Image (cartoon, rainbow, N blue to C red; front, side):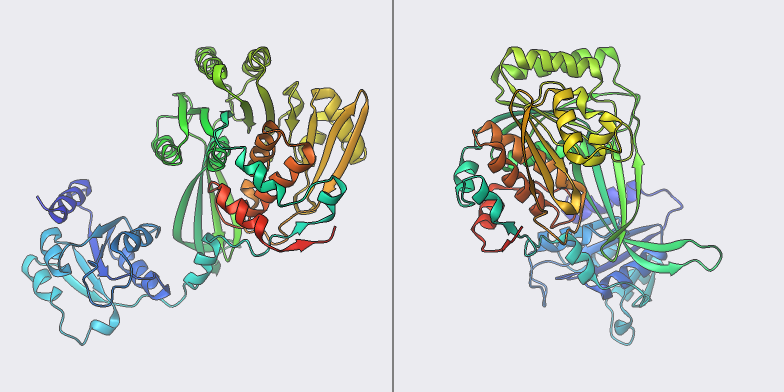
Length: 496
């Protein structure tokens, strides 16, 4: 059976008897606004939209079929993207879609598809769709990496006696580090929309989804980032029995992470949808449960983590307070890690829920935001320096990096009993595209650098550089050593 026959059979099997199918074919070298309008029109004519991507031998094709196929698959309203092996007409005869759609410019031409659709009673429609969709260049700008806005401060390294170029040697020490990450997995969906306008019936913003991109986020992103910098990573987390968990497994295994999930039938895999238009996030929808894992699952997780600690160099707690890390489990893991001399660091995010980063005791480093630090102390009045010192003492942490968003980060380290040294790093990227992964990348890179022997000043500088690269793009894609080395070699700098 040919691939085309197999695909046709699968599509027909997936369709309900009453569902209609629309079909569009083309080269799709670069998916442009005209394609989006045509495909949106076709999707509105039927229940299921199937798009055929022409073979590489087709006149006018300039990109490989696999690449063109992936571009079409990323469009939200395309249900099936199909690799055509011969002519579109031959595939139409096999699939027998209800409707075949072609651009308006073909209406007055000879169309070989007409005979095929007439043979089984289908319809051939001509339309170029509506003209109201935003330019695809906005979508591409949203997705592509652009590190041109990264500015590396020069005075900070001078104050602390290191040169930025030395960080390349530090990166070389991260390769082969054995890292265990435990925390809340999040699957992030970015739905890029066309902003249609305001509803005339009520004050509601109206958008049309154009493209969906899905990424592994939360503690999963920390694990993927660590592997991107050369670590051998094991990741322990909670998942539901759903498509999101299967996506996470597939993605993390592709990233080289040893994925060790524990299934909890009482919760879905945490999923966050972000609806974006014109490079701005309009709305975030969270699909999650926040109750703690039950006692049996906690015992299983503890046994698995304890076994990993036998060969572990660094343990990272990446907590989003969604139930993966109840206090008893944190205390038990911490006790065993200390007994084995494993360095630990923790990040506890409370952006839209409650939590207490100080519950992670005896960490080498904590990386809260200012709000998270103040929530932990219930102190919204004292100066930031006082809050920093109090949090270090309460959590018995060695280093504290308080992230301040557009204002950078405040670094605090205990230099003796009751004595502290502090400094501030400005934000390296004044024009971020998506700040959702900044804390994850800073936490991971700074922790690994500390474990490799760097002091807190070098480590936090490397972590801030990692965060700057991360917010240069949309989605929590894993950083790589090559990206950081390339940026270290760039000449861009700023005065503090």
